[in-house]
Image (cartoon, rainbow, N blue to C red; front, side):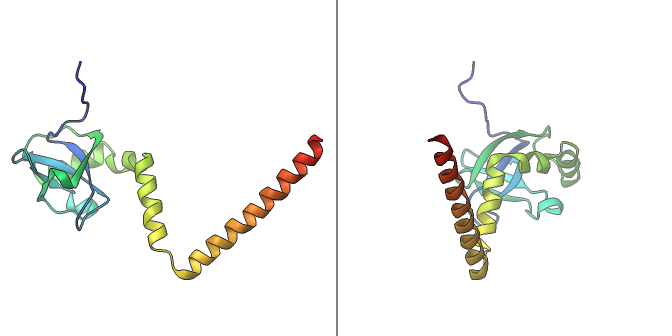
Length: 138
């Protein structure tokens, strides 16, 4: 029985954690050495071109597609769409958190004001309901 479940292998879906393409997923196409891998977006799907990246800059996910080392772009695109990797990724809690983080980062000053105002209204409604329930309980 293996202690580890995620391995650096061709076809493994990774989350890029640093650099220009941070918070996007890509596919390991080839392993160059113990520190670097060749990844591809595929570029036509999510805009990440084929390039070399350090393993310190990626995080392995549970997803894997069945491709051979050094697979061509067309084959990767086909498998990526067939296995609906993007849809599976968007269902994960990490993807949802990253999307929320991105939305908050893009908020304008007025958006932050509206959010704070809505939260204060919600808090007032909850407080009133709790008081009403406490009175009923007595």
